Image 1 (cartoon, rainbow, N blue to C red):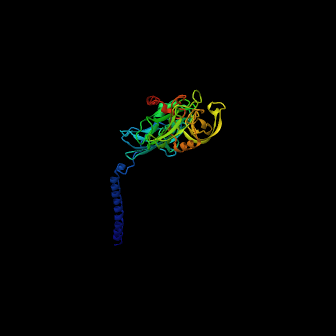
Image 2 (cartoon, rainbow, N blue to C red; image 1 turned 90 degrees about the vertical axis):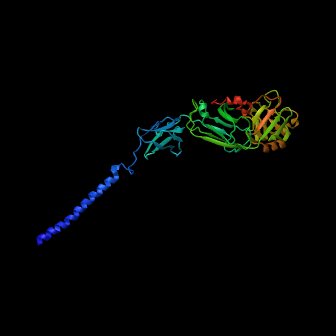
Length: 398
């Protein structure tokens, strides 16, 4: 009896152990079937292999960034190329999905991170730094951001600190937008101080109310020998104000403000003495600045020690020193004789009135006899003295 109970007890204790082993084997088989050996939907996407045209710590600046996938079936979904500040280079994946090219070039002295994802879910990255520039070129743009409203003759003007040899390359990165699709052109000239300069003027005067913007996408552009690299973008915007013109008649000795083609007021004046360096400039000059009360000294404009005066309501028309301003000392000549040192002089009251009416960018059209010709395009904003065809020919892209 005792031996039977022992045998019976031993058999009962063995059965659960076999059951557990069998259950574990079945579960393992089920898991194996479900996982499919790692080839199902839950499998991690393979990391793509990328090649980037720019590598290392001294990569070449001024060229687009290109990213390509190594051989395989994967296709790019998205590529991001960003500098340390998070600024991204725009770009586009190729039609076959195998490559990506930036629309902007890599700037000098900049570290970039490349991040790519594929349509299959893979991710990969690279990094590179472009060589620092040996020389940097900078610009001054007119009108600046502090001038919002301008007259109908105001151009967009860019003066460069250093020479620009690659004019065509620079010009194609200067984007002008107008609210009314105004026709215009860039023209390369020399500024009055001898620096390279490029102006954008419309074919005809702006229309009142037009909105104009400049996006100078110069970051990463090489200006050429002795010029250096641009290391930032620039922008400005302006709105065209009242449609008004100041007509200076050297024969009648009057200055007349017109608005929308109608006369607002005509005042007597005395312009430059004919027959020499004291004669006024003819043609069209543009109001550059309203400078108020300033000290005018003749030696600064090559006229010896002719005068040294504090002058009120000064309105600058050229870099060479032609102004419209109050000239009470010349009162005997207003309306009858041109007897100034080149400027358009008026009574203090009339100068104050005109000063309050004009806008930066208003044209001063000087007609009549006795002028010393027209100012060069770089002597103020003299582009309006150049025919439209000749102005277009000054573009580096023509």
